[in-house]
Amino acid sequence: MSAPNASDTIDHLAARLAGQHTALAQQWLERLERLLLVEPREVFPSPQLLDHIPALILEVAEYLRTPGDHEIVANTAVMAKASELGLLRFDQRASVHQLLREYQIFSEILQNFLAEEVSALGPRADAAAAVRALNRATQAVRVLEQQTVDAFVRRYTETIEHQTAQLRNFSRLVSHEIRQPLSVLQVISRLIPATQTDSESTRLVQTLERNVVRLAEVAGMLERLAKLSRRSDNSPSEQTVDLSAVARDVSLQLGDMAHARDVTIHVADGLPMLVADAGRLELVMMNLLANAVKYSDPAKPSRVVHVRTIASDSGPRIQIADNGLGIPRSKLDVIFDQFVRAHAHLDDELGAQGMGLGLSIVRECMDAMGGSIAVESLEGDGTTFTLEWSPTVIQGR
Picture (tube, rainbow, N blue to C red):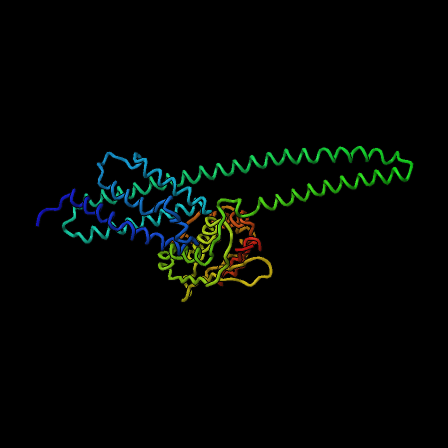
């Protein structure tokens, strides 16, 4: 058997990656569909936009073959494709957090594929060349990710600036519209006390009423526009989110941590569908579930965390309940404050560490989404966090 050849190894990996680009893109899309509510036709909507992920995989495969001093950023075609992907995901109401997650999935798929191919080559693979190929693929994904995110943020900034300009123009319009009827009212208010005849008083009162009606119409327009500005389609980071999918994805991410502490996370079916910021929702779930696992009670034979829907006559409401250590009564009133930790004295025993910022971040995220969070806890028994949102965030409202 001939000795492994570096060039042959690189060529083989690049060819295999190119040959499987469609299957790998499909694998990426399937994982994405489980995480996000995105239809395949929305990700690859038309020939004009091309198949972005398959095209990027082909470019990564070609990049593996290029000399070490060549950088993928010099390939203007592939960088343009990465930018197009960022603009596409912006139009689909994704968030920066989602883009990062999508690229994380993309990177994992490529890394696993290359690792499997190297394993299949066995002794025919040049180890050093295989490592270089893996590093080069990872570097390429990182550069493409940055380009995609930069394009997304630029469009986001342009949108915010456009909305700000609209608000400024509207403010000027309102000032103009209100100024004249207000001036009339001011004059009439001075004339009414001097009026002596009933007919003149009637005419002035009628004029006053007309202008009051006009002001009421302007006020109504202001109110309608204020409501419009709060709609989700004016917030690029908001979209329809399946809480069940988010909670399950977070529980998978925490799988190793939960397994090490023998904690079982149960996510109920049918959690609410919300129109909200997916990044904030995942951050809320991540902090609450991580805390539930981290502060499970090692003395209990069964350690569980439940994520479930709670019946409510107002907005959507869910609970995250555990049978862990619980929070001391003395800490309950301040548990959402920064740098507050209920079990700092047990860090060594539990293998836990932190700065006491997680729950304050959760509260900030809930506030930003127009929601609320409450806690009930009994030391030694467990803790229940209740999350509630306004009815307006329910899908379809």
